Length: 198
Image 1 (cartoon, rainbow, N blue to C red):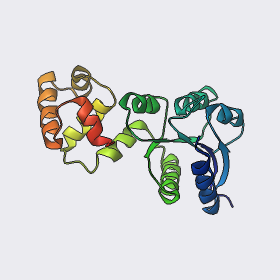
Image 2 (cartoon, one colour):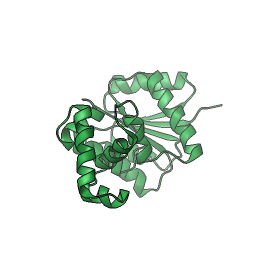
Image 3 (cartoon, helix red, strand yellow):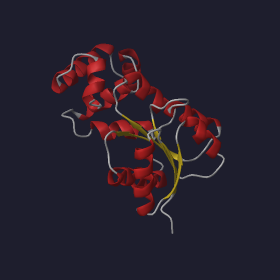
Image 4 (cartoon, rainbow, N blue to C red):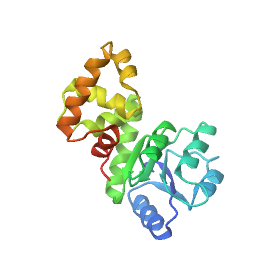
């Protein structure tokens, strides 16, 4: 029995072939596409997962995610990226990526992400907030700091965070200031790179 159907979208032919072979050996049924245009033509089929590179010619990973949304496709979405471009990563998350996988990685790492996402889907917990929580777990932050940093990463201003948490803006500013100091960063941009190292 197959562990799931995967659409693998990757413009580098050798990398695409190696990943497809490795995933097939691990028990997945894999179809491949060289870019978002080829992927769109395959999306009328059912897939459990779509694994797409972010940067590709013709149509990139953002286009793949947008097409999945347009079709209301139920596949779990894993985006492969280098985390070099904050704006693109935020766009990917806003388009509904379930997981960002940083290059380089092996078939084993991808397989464990697929299994974890499948298990989380059963619990209904595969959401953006859980993604950020996972990234923040290993950082030296208090629970309140972690909560605020999560909201910062989702793009909230200090005023929005204060309103959501029922705090004064000054309290938010002080708490974030302490969190930044703990992480050795001085701005939201630096914070992003501390959580998603390039």
